[in-house]
Every structure is written in C-alpha cells, then in structure tokens.
Image 1: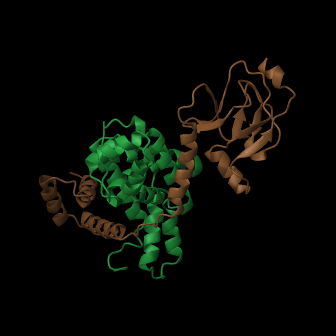
Image 2: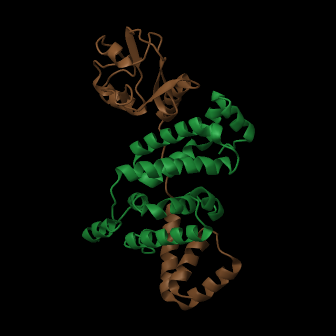
Image 3: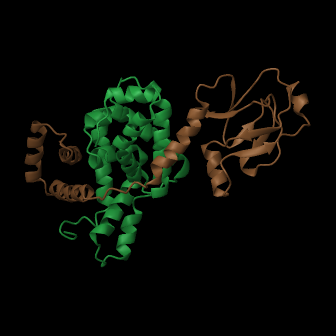
Length: 175
Length: 182
C-alpha cells in the first residue's frame, strides 16, 4: 500500500474506526516509514488539542427566542383557506402590489374582511382569505415573519404593525 | 445529556410544550456546539441554532422513527447550517494561517491561541469535508452514524475525515510541531 492509504488508516485509528488487521498493518508500516510516523505524531498532537477545545457557552436568550418564534407558529397552526405571504414583503395577490413591512405606511389590500387575522404558520405569514368579500376593513394587523421581525427589531420597532387600509383600489382589486 | 424517549417525541408531536422543552434541553448544547465549530461565529451560531429548533418544532410531526431521533435532529441542523453558510460565506483558504505564522515565527503561542487557530481552521475547511470531520473528530460520533446523518458511505466518511485531518495538519503545521506547545 502507498503512504496515503496508511494516512487514511492513521485518521481512522484516531477515531477508533480501524480493524485489528488494519491496525497491525499500519503498525508494521509505521515501524518502517519515518514520514508516516511524523504524520502520525502530528495528527495525534492535533487530536489531543481538539479534545481540549472548550465548549462554547450557550447564550441564555436562546430558549426565549425560540419560544417567541414558535408562539407565532402556534397562533397560525391549522389555519385553512389562507393566502401564503413571504417575509418581509406581503404579496396582495398574483400580480398585485407588495407592501414592504420594514417601511410600514400605506398599502393596498385585497380580499380581507374586518375579521381577517394574520397568522404565521410553517409557510410563513398568512392572512385569512375570505372569498367574495368586498367589505373594507378598518385596519389590518400585519405580523412580520422571522426575517421581517429582525428588520423591525433592527429599527427598534414593535413586532406588530398596524396599517390603515386605503379605501381606494380595494373594490377594484376584489372585483 | 438527557435521553429522549419515544413518548416524549409523541407528546411533542401532539403539541406538548413541555415535551419540546425536554427535547431542547437534551440537544441544544450539542447542536449549538456543532454549529459553532462549523462557523466559528457566536452570533451566527445563535441565529442558526434558533432556526434549527424552530424547524424541529415545525417538522416533528413528520418524524417517523425511520432513523434515530438524534440522527434526524442532526440532519436538520446540518441542512440549516450548510444552506445558510453557502449563502453568506465566501471561500477562505486555509493557507492564511501559515502566512500569519511565518510573520511571527518567533512568537510563543499560548494554548488558548492555538485553540483559536484550530477552531478557525476547522471552520474554514472545505465544506465537503468540514461536517464529516466535526461529527467524527470533534463530536466523536461513530462513522456508521455519520454515514446516516450525511447520507454518504462509511468509506466516504473515512476519506473525508482523513482529508480534513491532512489539511488541518498542513495549515497548522507550525503550531503542532510536537513539544513546541507541550
């Protein structure tokens, strides 16, 4: 066997993934090959240092951040008849306008009634879509997705944004 | 480490928050460490670990015991990390460490500094080798489990780990001359 094959065996040996036959062969080779012996020594030293690596401390806020995220997920679980929305932009409909959440402000909305509740599920932000609705909502609450929330947090804003929905275009879009 | 029995997984699948907390307690340190070794960036590690557990929560109803739960959670972690890092990190060469060292050849390296170099070198191993190396040489998982987690043959695991070790040895050669730091 060539030296590069033995070097693979050296590596496997360090992980206790070598057969007794391979081990014997390797030992015989190491007795004869000073280059491979040097490799074995330096890899052994490297492995010792890797074992000594200090485990990183897990930040305390990790669990809180996870629970915050899954709470949004739980709110929207089981929601049917929804229109999927991708963060951080909200598509109004196919070919419709989008509202950049991080900018806030005005936007056009389609097919949402006053009882529409934005929900977050595995596919992202969703708003319940009620077929045939033409009633104009007074307000729509938009929940940013995880990415959207990051953008808002970076700007020091709240997680939940409330936008006045404009009257114009609503009936035209839903018609 | 706490062990997770199948009843806890079933409970979590039914939406039991306490069961999810138990799963988190059992695995979060391992997953955090794995990601930290992969990217060597605490902030990125925090974000990605969070993402992994959210994916676990959302996807646990799809867990069907076709593999061990640990294998499944590692697969989620690896998919999350590799896809995120591909988007964000440009390729870096391992050779920079040799250059750095040659510039300060006479400086004695404390063990802590050596650790930092090792951590950094691991985190910039070629992506195809890095995870196999971390799972085996750092996390001490058996090759047979890494085979399942990464979906590659044991021979491929062995080859990748060996190749990673050779690259690390080359890049860290000035630091791992036996006796220098002992």
